[in-house]
Length: 150
Image (cartoon, rainbow, N blue to C red; front, side, top):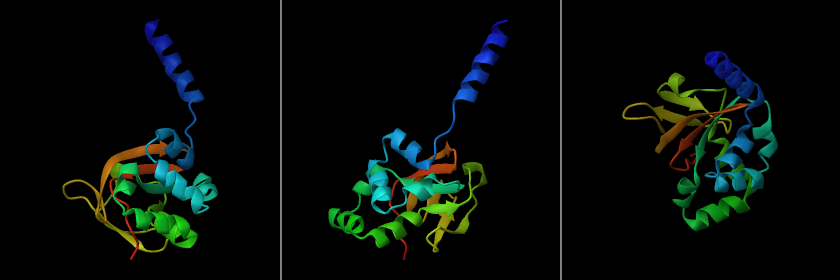
């Protein structure tokens, strides 16, 4: 009887728990305040709330804090450049950690990111510090550095 009640409780929880999209998930996490501000400033909210699927290598607030203030202020003031930097962190499709392979992957921005898997996963010079944050339209992997397109 206890197993049946537990199974029903789990089923009810999973039915009621609808995953949020990338933007709402980032907002709810609380550690992506700068990223969310940048996404809004770049006019990318509707895109990242769209059907996707997307894989986002999301710099956390500590990653943005590593940028010189003048660099961040400059990006926030230049919508086109900001959009290019942000879309450089996004790959089409939903790539879970178990499916990551070393090599170059094309970003939504158009350039490529170099993925390495020796001694942990790296995206260009950024370490992936948390993986597989599932969303309704893709997945977020947290990185510790903002990566810049060439």
